[in-house]
Each structure stands twice: as C-alpha cells, then as structure tokens.
Image (cartoon, rainbow, N blue to C red):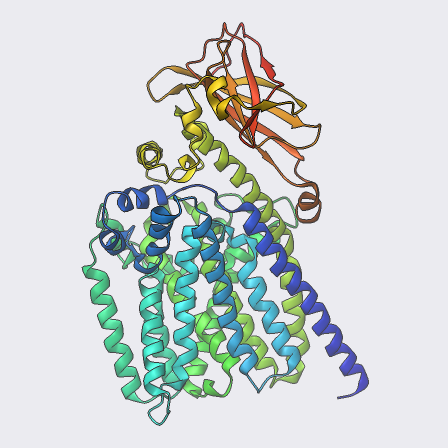
Length: 595
C-alpha cells in the first residue's frame, strides 16, 4: 500500500469515526431528552389488560395480532414495583437497543477477510442505521423500543450462532440452544419476529449446514407458529388474522406497497434537505419512489439468489450478518404489507409513516453491509461504496436533527396531556397525542385506574393537592422565590363531573431565570383548585442539540377546576415542598374564550 493510499484510508477512518460518534451521541441524547414520559398510544389498551389480569394472563394475550410475551414483563415490573413511571421501561429499551447494536458489530469485527477501513465503515453504517431519529416513533417509546429491540437482539443472536450448528462442531448443542432461544425471544417479542425462522432456513442453506440442522430449525419454527396461533387474542381476532397474512389485494399491489415502503426512509431523509418530510400520499403516488424501491428489491433478491447458488457465505461474517438483515427485514415488511394492504389502500399516506422505518432502515443497513463486503474483493468498487456510505450518512442528518426536535415537542405535548389528567379534566385537544387509534375514551378509562392505584402521572400525588387550602399544603411552608410571570385563560373545557374548567397558559420565572416545574392555582379563599406544570430546556442542551430552537422557558399549562370567571385566581410555585410568597395574578375575565 503506497503512502497516498495509507493517507486516504486513515482520513476515511477518521471521518467515519467522527460521523459515527456524532450520530451515536446525538441519537442517545435525543432519545433521553425526548422519550415519552407517560403512558401513550396502544399502551393504554395494554395497561388496561395488565391492571385487570395476572402477570401470566397479561403476558400471554396477543395485542393487535402481536405476541409481546417477553417484553411485557418489563412494563409489568414497572407497574408493580416502580409506580409505572415509564423511566424503567425507557432505559431498559435503550439498553436493549445498545445491546442489539453491539450484537450487529460482533460479526463485523470478527471478520478477518475485510480491511480495518471496511470494519470502520461498517460500524458507521450500523450506528447510523440504528440511531437515525427517523425511527424515533419506535425508539422514543419505552414500550415499543423494548418490543423492537428485544426482537432484534433475539434474532441477531440466532444469526450469529447459526454457523456453529455444524454436526462436527464442538459447540453444536450450545449453538442450537442459542439459535432456538433467540428465535423464540424474537417471535414472542413482536409479530415481525416470526420472520426469524424463514431467515434462519435460508441462511442454513447458504451456509451448507447439514439437513439435521435445518430439521431442528423447522421443528422449532413449527412449534413457535403453533404456540403463536394458540395464544388468545385481546379483543377482536381479526387484527391477529390480518397480521398472519389475510389480505384482499393482489400480488402486484402488494409488491408496489413493499417497494414504496423500502424507498420511504430514503425519500424522507432527502425531503428534509428541502422543505420537510414528504406529505401524505407522496410516496404512494411517486413513480420515482416505486422505481427506487423496485431497484432495491431486485438488488436484494439478486443477492439472496446469488448467495443461495454459491452457498459460501460462511467465509465472511460481515456478509452473513448483512444478508441476514436483508432477508429478515424484507420478510418482516412483506408480512406488514400483506396484513395491512387494505389499510394502505384506504390511507396511501401511511406508506410513508415513520413507524415502518424501523425495519426498512435495517434493510438498507444490511444492503450496505453486503456492499462493503463485496467491495473488498472488487477493488474498483471500494471507494464508490465508501462514498455512498458517507453521502447516505450526510443525507440522513437533517432528518435526524428534525426527528430529535419532534421528539422533544412530542414530550412537551405529552406532559401537557398528563397535566390535564392529573387535574381530572376532559381536554380532548391535549389528550389526542396520547390516545391510541382505538379512541380517546381509552385514555380516560385507564387513567382512572392509574389514579386509583397511584401509577404513572399520578404516582407523585400532585392530584391530592386539589381541594386543600394552601395553608395546609407542605405544612404551611412558604418562602420568597422572586416568582414573576404572566398567564391567561386559553379555553374552557369540562371536568370529569361535567363542571366547567379553564385551561391556563403562561410563563413563570424564579430569580428571572429558572422555570418552576410545578405550580398551584388557588382561588380567593386560598383553596387549591388546580395544578400547572412547566416545560424548559437547559440552555447548554438547547444550544448543543437543538441549535437554540427552544426557548429557555417554554411556559406552563394548568387547569382551574370549577372555574368561575368572576373570581380572581392566583398562581404560586410549589418547588421543594415549599410555596412561593409571590403569586401571579389571574384576573377575572369578561368574555370566555371559545372551547
């Protein structure tokens, strides 16, 4: 290797390390700063089961056709021992995501057939493919991340251990147990995990493993399928049947949907260089999206057929894990297409929904890993492939940053919705972000159970302050806080008992800088009639990760139960179990805002 080549490789390695570090650090930071802090979306329905059934019954039930047996014990533990505060679930999910990433890197760094530069570039591909915030719909949710990351970790263990399932291998039975256990963990963490079994069979063929090995995999696969079918569903069985493949669409339509799903993350990332993410229906109506996805599908199928004919993938662990990701995520997305084809026909914009990026992004990760492995033996292709990796990483960064911003905004809105529940009001506008597709009524139904058990947003007991006299709160402790601010009545909603309630918004400061996290709203008699919560971003955090897009003090939101427009209310901070001497006055209003 001449001096110029050495410099080129060292420069490439350094650039890849820097870009990978930026994606890794920023991705983890965005998730920690923007994850869902309270119960949300489908977990209202899941928690309804968990709160009214035993642990085993809750774990065995299928939700929307998915078995979540293994990850369910994570949120069951959170509900039982950690007051359902969502932090345990999120950080376990983040840990599983890091483990799944580490598992992908094991075969990358074990491969002795590729250069150090190829390993660095492969690491960059894995990090960008894993921590790109376009996948935040799944990763920012503790529960969904537990499902998806545990699924991937189980599948990856199976793929990594599969080559050791040779008859003459001293680790045959150990590898067999690991492969089958990983397959079962994947299958019963989320519905897409069932794609592990056909992937293992294809890889076993490409590895020239003996028929005995394939037979064991088939027996395990059939067992997993039978157990999956026999597991009782929660609610309608139709969703479960659709997940297993009922669809009224033709093959051509299904293939077109698959192609557009494959191209969606690429178009999403590219669109952020202009005016934002694709609008609803753009991916569905774009012939370019269809063509791009078709090319990707043909390339992937060509690589799979090539590997099945050559049957020599055992020589490169990098190529093996790349091919495994391609096959697994291709099958997983095809299952999604078959199960949701009617849904895609009714709502074409759903083809660009970020919740499907989890698997499509990993598909592209696998494609690039295979390309990097091939480029080692095709010298003229090496630098073009490296260039594609760098261009792809740079292409993804604006959408990565935008995803981090969106997560933080979603967290703020979720906290506002939780505040309405703590106050016992029915503010559908604030609750909408938390609600599952099945309807807002699930939120109010399960929130009452959480209130009774003092879980999640009710764990701190702030709701118990309402109705107390301020002199009885914190044993009457109060002190000067130099509280300043302003507020107004935003709209009128209703309490759960039908009485009127007012949504209050405003801004408050302590010492002209910090925003009080919790405030109380008192009436002229000194009775606490509502609580408010504020949202703020530390200046350093805002400057580094959000480029000063957030105000240091994003204001507070609260509610007045039993609101009387003729009365003058006051707002005090309630930090450190002490009320502020100062108050922010909310004067009477002559005309009420429209609800």
